[in-house]
Length: 192
Image 1 (cartoon, rainbow, N blue to C red):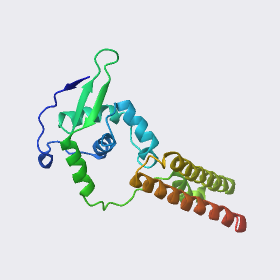
Image 2 (tube, rainbow, N blue to C red):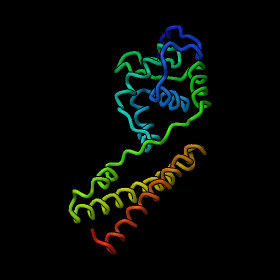
Image 3 (cartoon, one colour):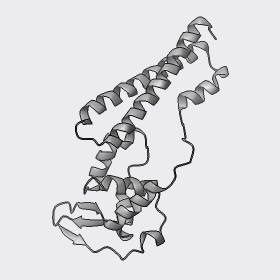
Image 4 (cartoon, rainbow, N blue to C red):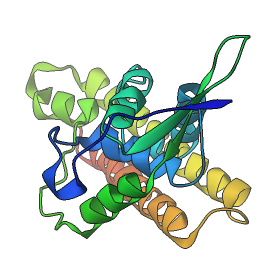
């Protein structure tokens, strides 16, 4: 593989292009080791894809932008499919460290179709409300069980912070699962 020269980039404090969440996802994933865009997609699917959703097509565009900014380097396979493998640069590590040091004060956004339907439930039939509660209960239970299984599969090779994200995922899903279970019991006691 031959390294491609990166365009000169301004120091991280004077970047001409503002980095976004996808930029930091790419930098963060590359901090674990070099990867192609496809490998980034796989890594994300098995890790932060559990709690951070975005269009995977961005993983094919963003690395090239980060190369142009000097935050990522690129090597291209000679012949074959000419796969591009990306690696984080020292400037990229600095940018990631700066972002990690920034305060995180924004509110967590919850986008749950089940809650949206429950909010407008006065227009639904009692059977629809029961089905909604049962489906959401089963969905959150399955997701929590999936987190437990995932933890068991990666525990030996994951770092402490990755395991903490799974712990929060499990706790969140179990809490929401309990809400829907309690709601089903309430519906049994006091039908709509």
